Amino acid sequence: MKLGKRLSQISDLVNNDYAHIWDCCCDHGLLGASLLDKDLNAKVHFVDIVPHLINELGEKLTQFYAHKKAQWQTYCQDVATLPLSQYSGKHLVIIAGVGGDLCSAFVQNIMRQNPNLSIDFILCPVHHLYTLRQTLQSLELTLKNELLVNEKKRSYELIHVSTNKINSGSVHAVGERIWRYKDKQEYEIARHYLNKTISHYQRINQGSDDVSDIISAYKSVQLKSVE
Ligand SMILES: C[S@@+](CC[C@H](N)C(=O)[O-])C[C@H]1O[C@@H](n2cnc3c(N)ncnc32)[C@H](O)[C@@H]1O
Image 1 (cartoon, rainbow, N blue to C red):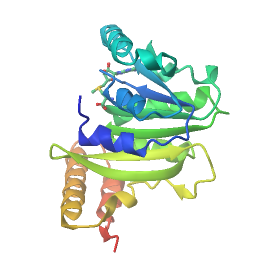
Image 2: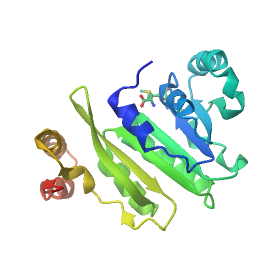
Image 3: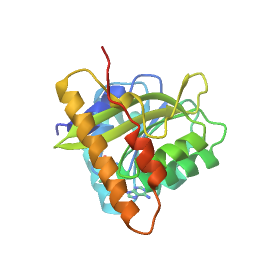
């Protein structure tokens, strides 16, 4: 099945640097299957908490990827308890399509349980990006890349971070590279996403939570042309 733009962009970020790639919250396993198609050296681990999804996925992988049997494995498991330390080499943990709060909790748990492993994360949650970015900062993960991806008129932040301190970039509270644009279309997408995010926090501010700091941080964002 053809990948949508969001999962496609994630797949494009994955190179041959990894021994183990974890497609977390994999659902029907579309992303992980596309990574198997890329003929990387890595083993692809498919993880979801719902038994029937993992059973069906196991049957499909057995049918279509029997020739790569050594390169994939399925797990019906909570992502918070990934068995990373059972495998040596560099890990890439991909978490997409769940809320930013849950995504933050997963990253915190994985880091707590595996303090000495070399791990990259590609994260593409829905909502709560500010919370997620705070978590990534507190864990001192370094920034490899960040993108704004638009799919079906909705924008998603895609954040690639690492435990490796060699990367010079640090995670910014509201993002930096995602606000750079190279043409009118990218400018409009970024502007729309920024306005939508500010409106979201302004609505929260009208209730009992004071999020005026967050609103100020987003209001200080300046869209910049990369040229
Ligand atoms: C909307 S799908 C995301 C699918 C795909 N990653 C994507 O981005 O399109 C969310 C998936 O997360 C799974 N999920 C939710 N909580 C989980 C947990 N704690 N551990 C593992 N999987 C979980 C659900 O079963 C569901 O299949």
